[in-house]
Image (cartoon, rainbow, N blue to C red; front, side, top):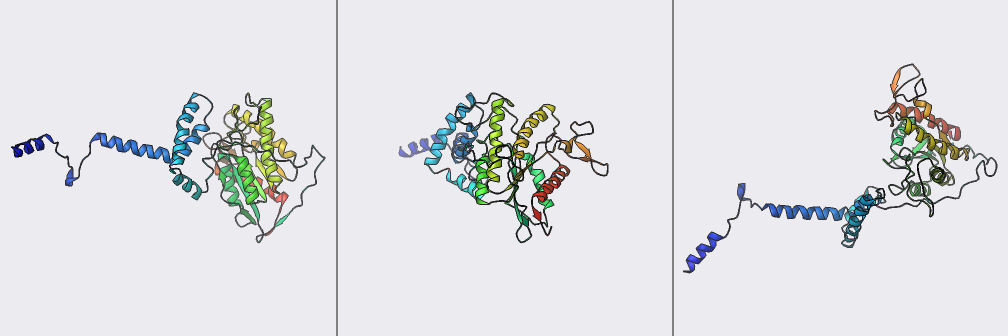
Amino acid sequence: MARESDDRARRRRPKRRTGEGGRRLHSAGAAIVVSLGALGIGLLLNAPGLHKSATIQPEGWKRDVALAVTGPLETVSHTLLLDRPREGLKSALGRSADDVVDTVVAPVEQEPTATEAGPPAAPKRERFTTKQPLRIWMAGDSLAIVPAESILREVSGRPVEPVGEIEGRLSTGLERPDVFNWFTRTRNVMKKEKPDAVVVMFGGNDDHGYMTGLPDGVTISSFGSRAWREEYRRRVATILSTATRNGAFVVWIGLPITKDAEQTRRYDTINAIVQAEAAKRPGRASYLDTYFFFAGKDGGYAQYVEDGAGRLVKMRSDDGVHFERAAGDLIADKVMKRLEQRFRLEGS
């Protein structure tokens, strides 16, 4: 009787499924559970980055929903110490501030300018040699990368030493410190590295009417409005003053003419602000106008420009905004001339 009962039990029990080589096969439900578990762990490990991505979205219901989801997720991740692996990796890559939402645009006490206290005394033309090279920091948005690479080639064998790597950060600028805070970064570099010269290019992503990090009570209605100009002027002045008060000479590369006429007009607005602020700091800052470097014979945008030998050279990328290497080389040559006017580069 007991034997018959055991036989019936064995017949009712489902037979284990095995694959090739006797490998046990799991049900689809088990695979889904494992996948969901892995997804959950992945979300917790990446929670700080997800929360920052939600924070920097434009205001609206999508941002509200994203914050409602990622906020608690980040709290749980931090409580369970699951954010530590990401934190360690970012630190090893020198990007520990990536997940920090920093919107502070701390104003710097400005130096006396040409319009405030008469023409300030021009700084002494310092001498640099191979034993004591000129230390230069290059930074900006994606437009800054190609010219900076050309400058690196240009200074090879000369008494110039780059400070770290080129800091070309895509989709950043002075409008959105929540995406990347260039004000904090510039202050930290000047304090820690103390470069003698700073070459920057900002504004390629700043032709919008939305800013973060606004002072209390300040609102921005639209790009180019009086409020927008005043706030953007303050931000340009903050970058310039942060560098110059720490003894650096700044070359600010202006935005170029682009294939889009409306974008070019917006860039003109930005360029005018930068040029005016640089002019207040003679001998300490220099604005490099690139507009006509890349204009055709009719004064409009040209992707190909004639070189000194009359040959057409491709200067601009197919997107009508970014630079090709030949354009970077041209800008680098002009930047070096500004640096040579300001410094004595001996042994070059």
